[in-house]
Length: 246
Image (cartoon, rainbow, N blue to C red):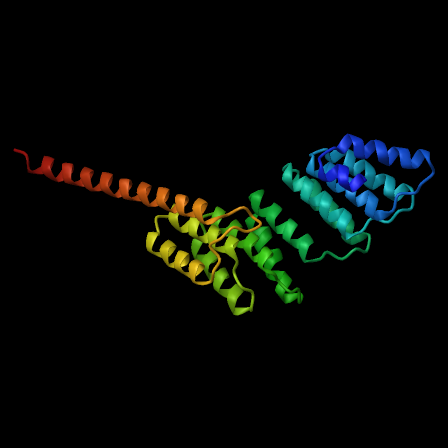
C-alpha cells in the first residue's frame, strides 16, 4: 500500500501508514524504506527522506544501492550537488559499490551543475574500470557536452558509442538534432534525422518524444535560421547600396 500511495503522490498517507506499522510492532524492511524514501525524494521532501535514512541505520536496517541512488537523484534535482557527492562518498565508505545507474545519476547531476570536467573524468574512468556503458549513460554524457556547446565532442562520443556496440536510441538523436539546429548546422541535423528515420526511431517512446513534436521543432528551427539568413542578407545588401550612394 505504501508503494501505491507513493506512486499516487499521496506521500502523507504513505507516511501515516509507515508510522502505523511501527505502532503495530511491524518492522519495515529495506524495500519499504526505499519506497518511501524514493517517494519523498520525488516530492522534494528531501529532509524527511534523509531522516528515514538515519532511522534505517538506528534500527539496524541496512540501506542498499537503491536507497542511495534515490537520495542522490533527489539531491541533484534540487541542486544540492555538494550533499549528493557527500552521500556518494558515504555510500562507498559503507562498503556499497556504485552501479551503472549510480554513475548515470552522478554524471547527469554534475553536468547539470556545470561540473562537466568532473563528469567527463568519471565517465572516462568507467570504461577503464570495466563497467558496461549503456545507452542511457552515453545519452547523459552527450547531453552534457551539448549543453556546454561542445558539439564536436558530443558527436564523436556518439560514434564511439556505436563502435562499442551500444546503439543510439531516439533520445540520442533528439539531443544531437536539437544541438545541431541550435548551432545552425541544418545539413547535419537533416542527416541525423534521416538516420533516425532509417532506424525506425522516429516514434513515440518513454521519454515523451514523438514524430509530431520533433518535426514541429525542426520546422521552427529551420524557419528561424532562414529568417536569420534573410535578415543578414538584407542587411549586407543595404550596406552595399549605402556604400554606392554618392
